[in-house]
Length: 624
DNA sequence: TTAGGGTTAG
Image (cartoon, rainbow, N blue to C red):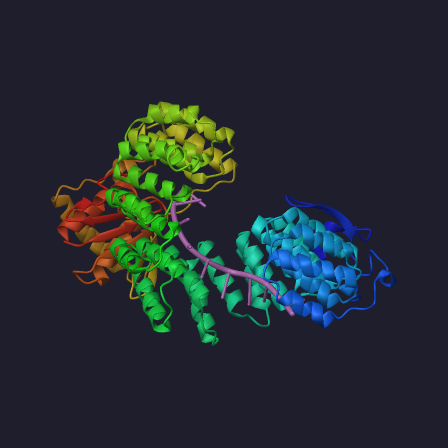
């Protein structure tokens, strides 16, 4: 299908015309030649004929630095060893390996013969140093010279497209590989899976992956990571199992990827199982695997297990420290996050921009306003880290949550870095908490100017109108969403029982034990009512009467998952649930009551943070 | 004489 699409879209009169974020090209599409690239520079007769290629190759192999490579190069030039392609390629490779692209290019231009390997070295050399313009330029030259594409040179440019996240260009290269008959090239396919996955076109990645005749460990790893990143971690972990079923033994990189998938999923039992599996492999906890495991345990709800790993790591880098700070932050333990910062500095590790995002986030979610302000002002003054829009967003969140909305607005208006949707979204969230309809409308105008495509912002605004009883305005927003083709993301809650995940939507009756779940919910509801719980109908945002609103709240996905947890998880064990959106205010109150009345610990992971409910109190101190 | 897959936030 892609072949015909490629011809239809890109190829015209034997020429290929193309432009994307990275490229603007026109060249002949006939690149099926099997002959090496013709001589483009000097004629062979111009060289001195007395030389010993073997001697020069050995000299090159013993070079320890760029200076020595240049010295041998000078000798070769004098003795004419360029006639030997292997020697010239080796020299080219050494220049590229040492990042001396100017020397490499000069040599390449002077080479009397080039084979596909020579081209691979120079094209790949530019890609390695991140000079993608030169990389694609040389790739275009490669095609123009009629060099055949193969399973080695094509993946280089496909990877460049991946790094640039240039899907349009990636599709073009894919088309060219098809025209060159590389449909089943092992490396080409693996790099295409990676490219499509990183460009978030997971279905295209999956299609190529499925059709591959041989899938090695690296290709499986790419696919497992891509599925996790694309929001389907359950499938990602299933792929990990399938890979092992096919007899492929994971290495450390694959383990890091599966740990990442588990972090995305947030399932504690799965995390423990993977940890046990890693222990069984005998791999040591190096800085990358250890950091991934800190993140996994934290995102599965156990910040203590994350700290346990952290304390046992031999080597920690800035990413490790930032991950641990972030973990404390989204578990609402801002003070502990802040304690780590001087410890990190004491170990000689300097913070980066992400460390500051984590610190500011931790301050914001623990109500540590002055501390947050101090970090914000010190990040440039003391550590040379320039605040970007993410840091400003944290500050707006920090001030906004504390009710200092006008200060937050002032900060936005005074900032010089480019404003984005998330920044205004943070202020809109604060308007929702503090019921500032006046400011919300102003924020909405800014979001509208940015042509926000985030349905969450529209929903937030419609909720603000609903809270104020402005049903007509709410309807207008919903109408605008419909016209813009934006849909509210449906809320889902997951609960893991015995390593199996159960998913609930609002009013869900698909679970086989649905009638028991609703009976449990009713029984709990009666107990809660006696204890003084009143459904907060502000969170049932529909223009209906109070009784109906209560009914809508009653069947929120969080409540259904908790009722199921009460049915199947023994007393003494925490009930852990994961919500894809922010937990609703009424469900938050419900959890507090249940934790008190049923004497159960409930741990909720929502889209922003964790809430630990115990004895009727939430770790977020109702500050979220 | 050629490769590729890994950690923190949003």
